[in-house]
Every structure is written in C-alpha cells, then in structure tokens.
Length: 100
Image (cartoon, rainbow, N blue to C red; front, side, top):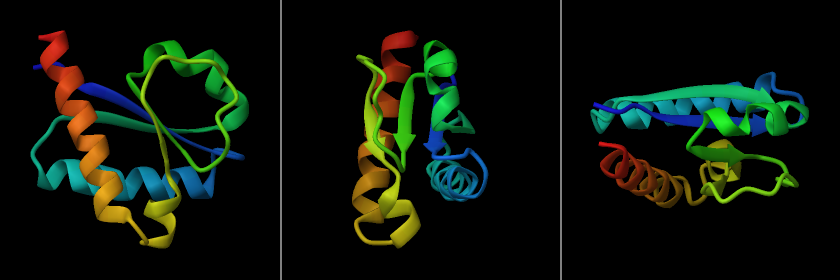
C-alpha cells in the first residue's frame, strides 16, 4: 500500500510544524490510513517539495506547485480543524488510489 507523504511547513520548521504534524498524524492513525508526515521550515520547502504529495503550511507557500496545499492554521487554533482534516484525508485517499 502506498504511503502518502505529507510535509507540514512553518516559518522555522521547529515548534509550529511539529505540533501540527503531530496532530495530523493522530488523525491519520485514527482513520487507519498509512502516511509519512514530516515537518520543515519554509526555507526548506523548495528543496523538499518533490519528495512529498501534500503540503500543509502555516505560512504563505511561495513555491509554485501542482500539489495540494492546505493551511495548517486550523490545526493550531482548533477552529475549522475537523473540516481541514477531512479535506487532507480526502486528498490523501485520492492520491493513494492513483498511486496503486
């Protein structure tokens, strides 16, 4: 089974992206969907983009990409969190089906 790769991005790649990645990981575990979720700083995005299927970012994504990009803010504030997670899971499920 293909594991969708998700990169969670914040300004520095330390606290915010790690917190959002942790929460996202919990949701995917509950849904029993195998994924790889990593965190990174915005300055790393251009170099790492090709290795990932989905980007979840708390900062403006200025790198041009055709990959799905989601805002990480709901994972940090809790406002709209369930809706965001549903969208990311739906995108991951679609990508997984395409890869298999």
